Image 1 (cartoon, rainbow, N blue to C red):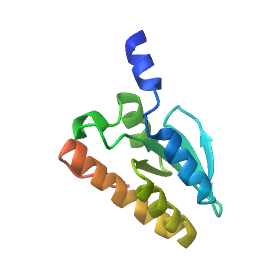
Image 2 (image 1 turned 180 degrees about the vertical axis):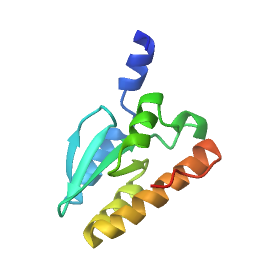
Image 3 (image 1 turned 30 degrees about the vertical axis):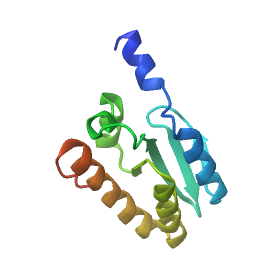
Image 4 (image 1 turned 90 degrees about the vertical axis):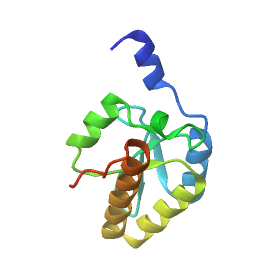
Length: 125
């Protein structure tokens, strides 16, 4: 990977501080891990890996990077893409309802992300 690609992949989306603030205000524990995705969040013993994308960008620019996609394809845990405060509230509601609700939220979230940004369905886990 080139230095430019590394810098691009390491750059935070403009909305990430707002997303972290919103998640924290909702009582979600947030760790800014940056690699392999932006955040690791947890509530009520349920942990989710979160990639933050900026909804102001065109859909093709909100695709997962190559490294994020490689991680997503091998990760057997929960993973989702968060873009807005509403996404934060939806994730929180799922976390409050427990693992099964969070699993369902993450699956739908990724299917929607792939449909929007790649014009295809999300992977089946």
